[in-house]
Length: 424
Ligand SMILES: *[C@@H]1O[C@H](CO)[C@@H](O)[C@H](O)[C@H]1NC(C)=O
Ligand SMILES: *[C@@H]1O[C@H](CO)[C@@H](O)[C@H](O)[C@H]1NC(C)=O
Ligand SMILES: *[C@@H]1O[C@H](CO)[C@@H](O)[C@H](O)[C@H]1NC(C)=O
Image (cartoon, rainbow, N blue to C red; front, top):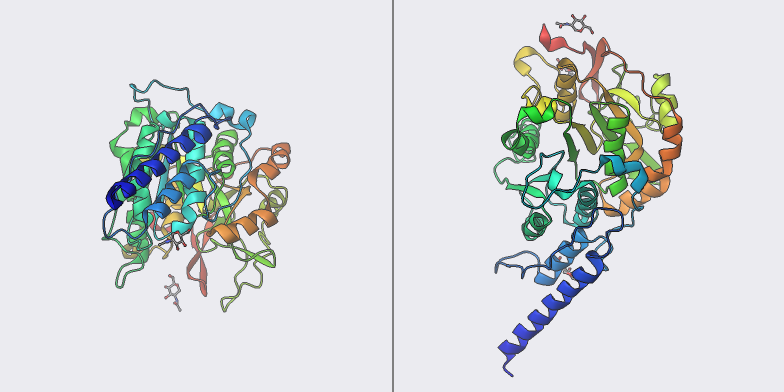
């Protein structure tokens, strides 16, 4: 037999074994979610200048489609989903021919985060399978990723379409928040809006009058399916407009420092922890040092209201976005608005439009790499570890906006401003 024929035979054999694997393990595995079969992988079209060799690309796609796949890729095991707790979030199964309204809109901005993809997208996909693929959309804006992230997404997209998920994958090479001369927050706001854009073009506001659609905006975090569903559940349970996780940095267990302190403001307008001049992180473990209600609820893993948060993953009502009331933006220097990150301004605009039921769900704890993310789960627990405790608590008593909010263009420059200063 010629060498060429042998190569072709070997390729066919490899594809057949992948197909068999998917049929046996993935097709019959989804014990909790609606029964959705994963179709065998198409032969992946690899361009000659591809970054990832075929076998690596295949490994990523398989690991994302089925997190139990045994690959060399780094990931960690997540708890299985509590069917009873989250069942009411499920959408009825529609026939393949109909296009039900989008009830869960997943939005991600990804850049150069290849090692994270199996855990991150694997969890997103498991949540989508559980919720009902036909009622879910997945919008990913990716760009400037020399590590092969784009190739994995390109190979993944047809697989997701076969599952009935509406996918909107956008490649952006123009906007670069890290690029020279670019205003970082303006670029970041544009990228986030790009991820939300399909929500406004593919739906009608009539769908949203009862807050029926949820946006799940997830950063490049090591997240589990139960984190995603717990955020969605708590938003419904507490009748909140927006629910954020907690995110962490540092070197756990020795030190875990709340990460998103630039964006986050507690319900009385102050930072989550005090940042003395330096800036210094010496007070980082003393969270909500001057806000007793948040402090107590945080300690008991009960959701609590805040002025603003993002913290790696958020879930919010689609309505103000679909109706064009709220979008991501940079601060309005012409009006003297405090220089702030686009997620803080997003929360501020939510408040201005009457969507001030913004909260943190402290049972959901995230980090930005697989390795440290796993250690954070060991220290802070999985979302499912805290559900009994958080269920035992009372519902949030929603408050109006604080009079003043801490303005912090840089960590070393803090002052108080009326929360709605730019309205005047
Ligand atoms: C491809 O996978 C092999 C085996 O896991 C690994 O050693 C190699 O570094 C990977 N190559 C790339 C470009 O990721
Ligand atoms: C501190 O921030 C305020 C408000 O944005 C700004 O007007 C002021 O110039 C800043 N001061 C310094 C020293 O950067
Ligand atoms: C800002 O909000 C306060 C309540 O916090 C309100 O009394 C005031 O009228 C608002 N200012 C403007 C300009 O809307």
